[in-house]
Length: 115
Length: 110
Image (cartoon, rainbow over all chains, first blue to last red):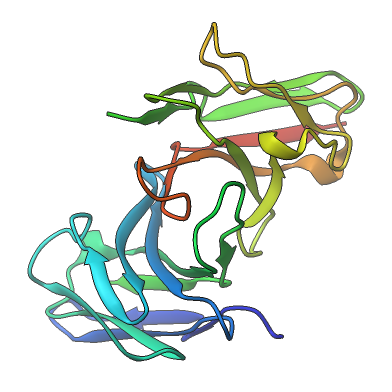
């Protein structure tokens, strides 16, 4: 398996533009997570899905952020409109059903710069 | 509420020196704790988990319930250990939803 696949790897966009980040989880994983990494706040969980259903989106910063998982092999994180403070690395991760000690597998991240 | 605290943003050590990356937690019940590592421009990956009581790349971490700590240690730092290290524990009620600390950047210099 190629692991969790994210695209784009890098994106530079202008303030106000819509940004869509994409993720393909590892096949067979029931959980999908979106994390945001910044220097100031470290790694923050934005939202996670179980069997394509959003379970907890309490980490989503504001209404400009939305995430979908239309099927078991694809998820998107959308920012509309984007702002400079959204600049960060966005990680997608997946895991199997929870049990003690289960590993979460991360993608390589999408490096977003909003100018 | 559960929380993970990594007090140091940056830890700089010389090659060959001992390393201790601090992690303190607050959690009700018996926590499962993890250390994740992110090398430069690579994906975040699991380094070790306390339940396995393993040593990975020379690193070990012992859960100290009395001090609520899970410090990551290595007796002799190597240049290739330079990376970002995150301590993590699951949110209560779900082992897969991890709360991460803010991370510590380990810099190993010659």
